[in-house]
Length: 454
Image (tube, rainbow, N blue to C red; front, side, top):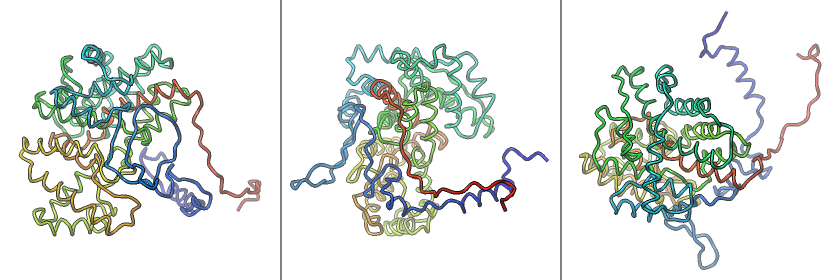
């Protein structure tokens, strides 16, 4: 009898239980064998696995006695402080994502002429093969935009005349094309989902070569193609802040690992997308927004004591998803502050005024004030805790009327820039496959002939 494609049969459940019974690895064994699980030491500090010039994070400085002292978080792209980078283009009243991409890829800030030409090149590359949207997106609509993105990236391999050439000029060409078309892939994937799974009208707007990446994304997503100047500038800012982060995150490490094998660009980017899709990496801002939805539905958010009590219940696994987490608070590296959150907070407030969402923004401020004290009281911490980038990015995407389904794909639209820089760096400088070691903890057994097994 043929089984349904998605059916988990009783036999599969039996095999799964058997697999669990035969697994004897427990958390204590990692300390026993001196293994840094997740490439993190016992204090949560990342284990160094490579060298990079693309970006770095500063969360601690040396104290007077040589000890590490937490400081306000700083993020640098190619040695340039992101706070200075964002202040520069925002003060000038121009879009900054393309400038950030140029900096990440070429390790220097462009002149006005170089930036104008680079923007034109990206705009010219913002096109898909004939019938690609019909054949790869509309004919096979899916419910998860990240999977559709990955499928599209892998399919582009077949349209490339030199897909396996990993010379730097060819890889750069491939990366620039992916950076240019990711907004189209994300937007069209969502329009397909909206049409086939939500019963809405199918809208496929065409990109305008005169628009920035952020403007293009809003134009393709909005049925009428309209958006305000502030909306586009704040989305642009969010893209810049998500374009790269320190080289040690899961998807960037995935990019390095897969690239080191000598594989093609499309396979490497698809692997990175698979990593980013995971809720422990790219989906945290969705959890933040849903947590606030639950809070607003169950407590009087104008009462500080009730909000505080809700946060205690979150940590006690008595509210929302009972995971024991206050989503959007804390980061693996930053302690006193996440610079990306600091920047987004400032502009989230501005957007909340335009959108009439000032009360919602004040609730976020209240939680940002209360949560660190409550977490410090309830949890044993080796460092401080503060709002991270996901805390405010989810709020901003909500105010931009972006659907949950696109929160992580928009992350990918930005992070493809960082992945590209790291892929090129790995090709240029490594020359060896990344091959980590695992310690075997299973004792040797004796082979038993099939007729003797019970």
